[in-house]
Every structure is written in structure tokens, then in C-alpha cells.
Image (cartoon, rainbow, N blue to C red):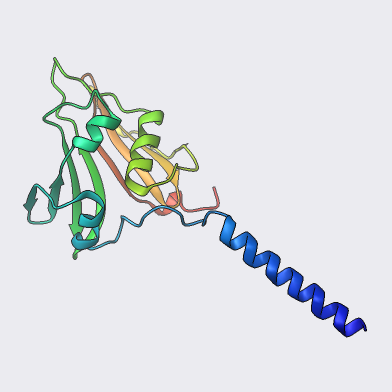
Length: 172
């Protein structure tokens, strides 16, 4: 009798675990973009509009919907090393007339656009003395090993990137 009860409890627990795993979102929800081949990246962002040695340029139409103030001549690029994506870049090419600012909210939108889920943190890991006269370089963790880096200067922000950074691995 005790054995039958134990079997029922184990079966109930296993059933409950199965139900929970089906109904809850995966912890790795989203899409893998870093360390992927150019073919995999094409499934997310279509064929590159330009491909120069180790960097592929992609259409900015989705980014213009996400960031209406992103300059029309701005670029969206992915850098590949050994046929694996290593860095996702936004190059706004700001001018006196068309400036682009990048902040925590835009970083979160960019991350979600690329990876398919929202970032879990915003943690400043900018090294000391990371600038010069008229500019400053910043680096922030967004979670799951991803950092965003950018250069801030009088026309806004430039050299915006998402890439792997060990300092951004959990635990935070």
C-alpha cells in the first residue's frame, strides 16, 4: 500500500514537472546571434546588402521602425571572425543636422531586436579613463554575457555595439 502511494506521488510529480516545462517560457528564449555562421544570421536579418571581408551590412528598415531618429544613411553591421558572428554594430554616421542618441532604453530595444527577448540588467562596467578630449567610451552589461559599448561625443553616440563580455555573465 505504501509502495502504491509512493508510485502515485512520483507519477504526479513527474506529470507536474512536464506540465510546468511545457507551459513556462524557456530560460534561453530568443535567438542565438553571437558565435553563429553567416547563413544562420541570414535567417534572422536576410541576405546582407554588402559583404566586405569580415563584416556584413544588413538592411536598416527594421531599425528605422524601432528608432525613427536613426539616420537614413546609418548602417547595421555584423562582424565575423573565423566564420562566427562576434559583434553587432550600429553606425549612425551622425551629422550636425541628424544626430542619434543611444541610452538605456534604446540599448534595451536594440538588444530585444537582436536577441528576441529583453535584457535582464543594466550594469555600468566602463573602465576608468575611457575617453579623451571631446568623447567618452562606455560599456554596460545587458545580461547573459552581452555588453553594449558606444562612444559619446557632441553629435550623440557612435560606434554602438553588442558583443560577448565575460564580465556580463551571471551571477550579477
